[in-house]
Amino acid sequence: MRKVMIAGAGLTRFDRYDGEKGRASKEYYDLGSEAIIKALKDADMQWSDIQGAFCGSVYSGTGSGHSVIEKVGLTGIPIVNVENACSSGISALRLAYQLVGSGVYDILIALGFESMPRGPIKSTAWPLWERLMGFNLQPASYAMRAVRYMEETGATEEDFARVTVKNRKNGALNPYARFQKEVTLGEVMESRMIASPLRFLHACPLADGGAAMIICSEDQLKKKEKAVSIEAAVLTSGTYNSARVSNPDPVGLSARQAYEASGYGPEDMDVVQAYDTMSPGELWDLELLGFCEKGEAPGLLRDGYFDINGKLPVNTDGGLMSRGHPLGATALAQCIEIYRQIRGEAGPRQIPDAKIGLAHAMGAGPNSGIVILKR
Image (cartoon, rainbow, N blue to C red; front, side, top):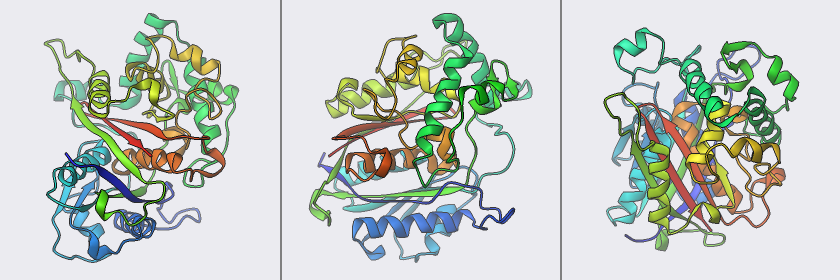
């Protein structure tokens, strides 16, 4: 498989674009096309250079990628719409990576975009009987896992709250984040309970947004300075037994595959984007990704290990908790943060000398996707 490079990336600010309370009015196709134009500029390429598009979204409907691309020009290229829940963006990127790596195409674009419906997300990926019982509501399903995690590791509600505090502090440095204001530990702990032991500020905000990454073979790269390669792009799903317990966990499975494919391990990563749709998820994901042993993440978090100036900076752009969560665009936004960090383009949240990083996203099903980028 030949070397695959990131040619450029584009991202909109994640926010509500409903035209209310002074906010702009934008649809998913406006946000997706805005991201495309930014990515082309970043790559120093023209739309006519793009040979195909993989378009991730969840709620945008049939042919949504075509609607986005129509805004920049339908040129006859193959357009593939990808729905894989919150991992849609990484799924789209992986498909493009495989086709460029195998030599089928030289320049492709991966998109993610969403105009999110309002209210709690009710996943239809769960069996009907579990949906009727409410297990498919994210706060409820995460709360059950959080209780088990607390019992098995001794983690506390305050540990979960510290994830929110850290990520909102990072998000205050990110002009693309929906929330750009820090919160205190007290504010998180005093927010209303939504599914015990999880509170309102343990949950990430939904948002609308668009993200795009152009990938290409090494010989097609226009901007050679600080070139970034894709070292791994993997996707795994669940391995349920009769009790619907995932064994092994898809996060751990995807991590092992990503490390094997890239030749790098968790000890090599300079910066990480961990999936934090609910704050406790960041803690157990970091453990499953191999960055520490089970039960160690809360203590490392308390010690500042995962801070921007810590040993392993995590969610330097604020993560889902601050940046927001437009499902189709989220995973690509995580990849874009790694791309910008290792190119030294992250502004006030820049990690010194970052050269390699990992982005991880989960999706209902379950799916677990990992991308490792290196400069």
